[in-house]
Amino acid sequence: MLICLLGMIALLPLRASATTEYARQTGFECKRCHIDAIGGGPLTEKGKQYLEEIKSQGLYRPLTLTRQIARLLIGYFHMLAAIIWFGTIMYVHLLLKPAYASKGLPKGELRLGWLSMAVLLITGTLLTIARIPSWNMFFTTRFGILLGIKICLFLVMLLSAVVVTLFIGPKLRKQKTLIPAQDNGVYTLDGLSQFDGKDGRPAYLAYRGIVYDVTASRLWKNGSHVTKHAAGNDLTELLKTAPHGEDKILAMPQAGRLLASGEKLKLPFHLLLFYFFAYMNLVLVFVITFVIALWRWW
Image (cartoon, rainbow, N blue to C red; front, side, top):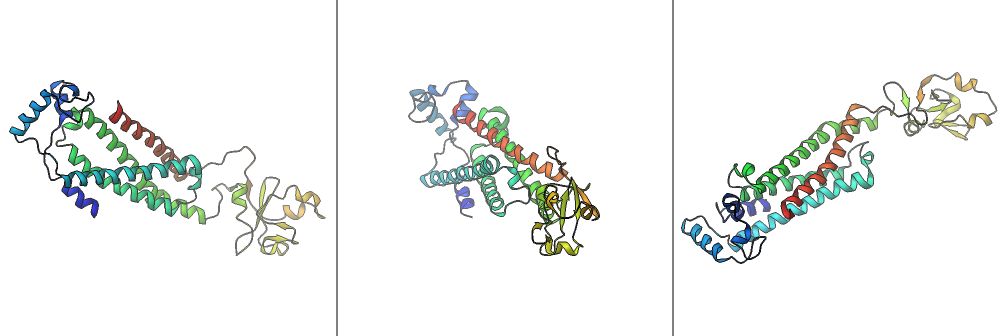
């Protein structure tokens, strides 16, 4: 609400001196009107003359102190939200890795990301309206073109966030609660460990690459065999020390197979899509930062 009120104040002046636009129209460099060659600050005699001309035409309306403060605060919130959003993306993707969120989106990072995007959307809209008086500027000025590119990239990231949150996220959470095996019955060691026979869960074990279901066996009550062996593990090596042969294991019903060392597990489509969006957003963070660098320093 505070940001919206500040935005209304900041947007009251309909026109201001657009020296960059003037330079583009006339072909003059900034130093023609400004003592500083890069623009801004004290004016040259030509600059003062141009200022008087646009004043006489009613095209120059300097911002009041209140409006300057409002615009400053809107810009501050915009930058702060961008830092938080980009920082969260880089932290999750570079340090924690996307696999950190592949089993369900963390609620804390999700709330922080959406709050940052909401602030960016509101403040960015207000700042764009204040700086772009007409749609034509998006196609005829360097500032407008770079701003348009930045807005398009932001909207792509926003759309991907909507897809991940509303469609991929629920599938990730559902997958976390389901049996961690593929449709073809392939288990990883991590997935197999969840079948430990405790708290009502099934009891599975692996032997020579095959996963066996020992849930119904009285010898594997609560996922434990003579208090020495636990379900949810690959017992191929341990069986060599057992007082009985492998026939006891081979008689149990098969539940699937264990993923072999070096074999890659085929990921479901929604998980592949999640990784695609994750790395795409990381790339877009660097692209947007580069666009800002071009805008400010090139």
